Image (cartoon, rainbow, N blue to C red; front, side):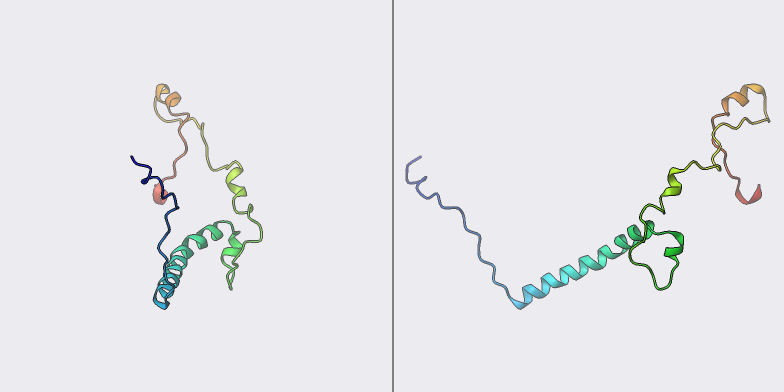
Length: 110
């Protein structure tokens, strides 16, 4: 390579984009569409942080008062889940095999 190839070391310039009313309107339209599309996701996240009373309040509460109250029951042990309940029906060999199975609810009282 010759020295003339390395002589031009100026940084590359970006082409200048003109600000036109059409381009401004397009950018504003894209922003409005993005906000409308993101609103349901934001509403779901905010609703998951609310207490049941706040979710049913009219007019709606936009920001929850406490953020951990809705999730506090998830960390507490639940008495409805039984992990080691021995079954009394069947031969003894199947009783030991089914002691670690969770309790299942039956549909419609069956």
